[in-house]
Length: 297
Image (tube, rainbow, N blue to C red; front, top):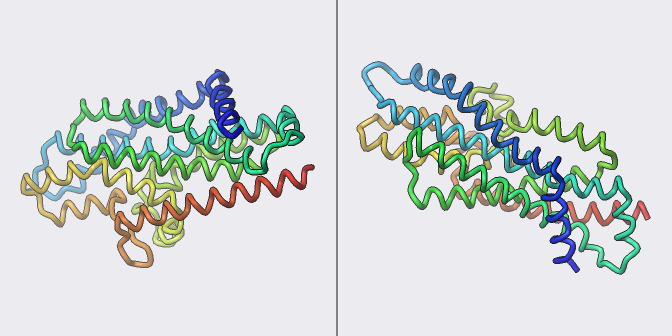
């Protein structure tokens, strides 16, 4: 029965032209905006940060900017697209479909689990299509990715999609109208990119805000993608004799190096924190969903 519900939810998502179009167009719009507007800003910022006497090849600068751009796009899409695909659970409540399911002999966990898995798989399809577009973009501006980097980026996308789906699932439990769907979608699309450090590196924020954002798992999700998207670029910089102090400064300026309570957070601990957060959010979502539906009945 769980498989049948997952299949039903996925089919409805891809048949809903409105939700599908919104999910597909968001990454495309972000990629175009990043490439046309933010690219020049990031490039000028990098050039101004490089001391005189340390020439850096244009290809390396372009590759660094490209890696920052695609990491920002993927970090945002894994969450915003999850909200779009997860709105089906709210629409079922609006249309009364959930009430029909509740009078059937379904086990309590089937509905929340099927909504979560279906949303996760639907989001993952969109995010990997976006990932493919990002790789094509990098092949034009500067390719320094190894097969291992691509594999880790894929893992990061899966992990962030799990997180985005869990976060959207918990929020959507409390939504009951079409107006609430639109409001939440607008807020998430506009604000999430700033909170996760995608639009502007967290290193540019005030120390108090940096401290507050260090408690958010989204901060580390963005950093994971950014580290793997730029690892090859930094390695090439070292091979070309660029001072390690300058490379470390660049890493810190674009959130490849993050600190929690003045202690640098390793990639392992970023993965650990994200994994624990996802597990806790999924369990919390299932518990809240079951309790809410009991109350509704």
